Amino acid sequence: MRSKGDRRHGGLGAAAVGIGALGVGEVIAATQGDSLIDAIGRALTDTAPVPVVEATVALSGRHDKAVIRAGVGAGALAATVALGALPDRARIAAIAALGAGAAALGLRQATRSAATVAGAGAAAGVLGVGLRKPRGLIGSLATAGAGAGLFVAARTLHRDLDRRRDEAIQQVGPMGSLAVVPQDGLEDEPGLSSLITRNRSFYVADVNPSPPRIDPTRWRLSVTGMVAHPLRLSLAELATDAVEFDAVMVCVHNRPGEGRAGNGRWFGVPLAKLLEYAVPESGATRLVTRAVDGYTISLPIEPLRTGAWPGYLVVGVNGEPLAPEHGFPARVFVPGLYGQYTGAKWLAELQLTDDTHVDYWVRRGWPSEPIWVTPQARIDVAAPGRASADTTTVAGVAWAPPHGVAGVEIRVDEGQWRAVDLGTELAPAAWRRWRTTLELPAGAHTVQARATSHSGEVQDGEDRAAFPAGPSGFHTVTVRV
Ligand SMILES: Nc1nc2c(c(=O)[nH]1)N[C@H]1C(S)=C(S)[C@@H](COP(=O)(O)O)O[C@H]1N2
Ligand SMILES: [Mo]
Image (cartoon, rainbow, N blue to C red; front, side):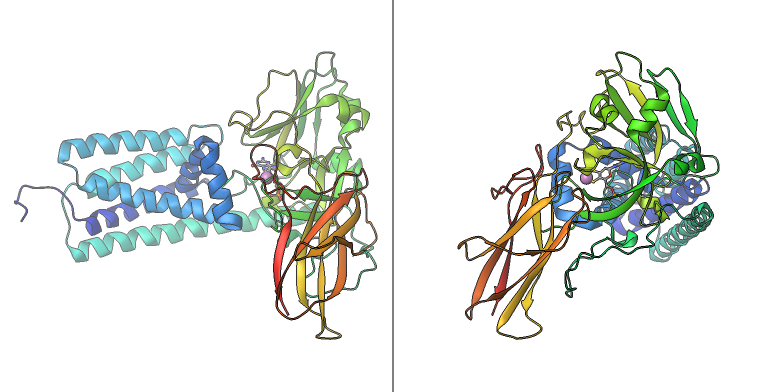
């Protein structure tokens, strides 16, 4: 039994206060389009050790952002319950420390926001007052309900800003064209990836809990640093110099068989051209692609300048401006480099500098030099043939940018490799579809695929994790006949 003067809380009441406090913080941050929960999530992403990042990516897959958000919410509630169990003075000190920590998140470059600072302060205030004395069931339910209502209000504010942002993107108009829908002569197969990945099916991978909202009318690309002619270019100015190219983008975390790869018809300005306009100073060795939130990916200048690495400042894909989650209004893409090395989305600046610059992931233990995508074949379909149930259709996509796919082979039950039919090559940097028909005896069989590049590189079958040199292994599926 608790004595009357004991201010310690039951878990339920404390959790209710936690929901109320988070709701207050979220709604205040949302007035500027920001989020306290997302600021915490981003800070965790920015500081988590590489093994934790790798495990999160592997376990959460495409749901990484939802998983981080839910984790932050659950962690905040658990912290409130722990706070509620503390004696008065320790609790007040802990809330003050937490509030100050959360406010500091609003001052970090990646999540800078006065509204987040204010939201953190207000949330700490709610915790301080709300945890002063235990409340009954009705009071707890009312507090939790009020907090939930504030979450809904915050969501409404975000939706409204997203809608206005989407309208502004529509005003931008087409970027490139998909006038001629490309064909590769391969029979379509249910489940087989399309030759060009639709914008809304394209995988999303980045450290931002939600995409930054950028006003295209005010946005300018700056080319700065060690250049004779600094540039400031609008989206419309960039679009006039843009050309189309077909290429596959692949995340370094794409283990064989996974979907963190997409094939697009991109629209972008060759980086060689921008560098020619800007005129690098001698001593400039590194091109830093910097996003609006300070995130950077840097590339060696020399191969970009000569065109040995055909890199682009991309302003559109598949005939449209980039989608918000894919870097609107501009990103850098060097076909053949893994996404983590290829260039920043939500680009603010191209800065020419020397080798002293250290990138976001390099600070966390990844190699500083770009990693090239290795040949990879993915099995999208392994199913009874439509013409005859005695046959099995196996089909998929393969890539080996920038050289291109020369061949794809499959093997059954680790037997002999045999070549499959290939669709025509859209471009060497693009993915290539493939297909074959097998006659298999009844029972379960494993089917594996491997790709070979035009440069003679054969896909490595050894199972290797993404960190630190990129993944390898064969995609293996089981078919039952
Ligand atoms: N600003 C910014 N750009 C970024 C990243 C990021 O976290 N922030 N992630 C990179 C990684 S790891 C990949 S795989 C690609 C993914 O691009 P997509 O989300 O359009 O598929 O963006 C790259 N560019
Ligand atoms: Mo990635």
